[in-house]
Length: 95
Image 1 (cartoon, one colour):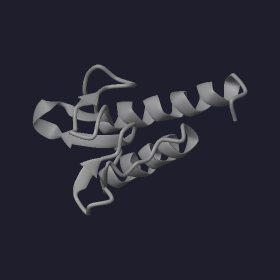
Image 2 (cartoon, helix red, strand yellow):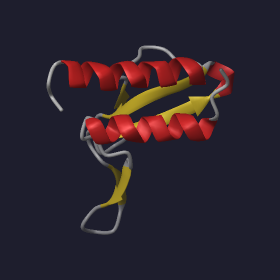
Image 3 (spheres, rainbow, N blue to C red):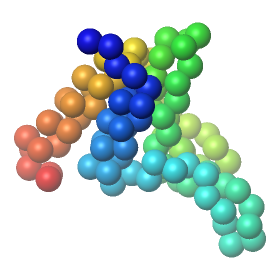
């Protein structure tokens, strides 16, 4: 099954909503400067390095960690991972 980038983005937003993670990583602070929103998840795509990965903004300077995957995956693998995350959350009764 072929998975488009738009489908991946939809699944990513569903997971962010379910896990109560902001999907927008850049926000303006009180002085109008753009900063990274701590705890926000960002969908990163780079076909040269193997596909998709979720980055979590670690601090306002933009340091990142990978909360779900340690490596990049294809679109199909990403959608499968999203389905698993959503099913696991419901299975343990968190939603």
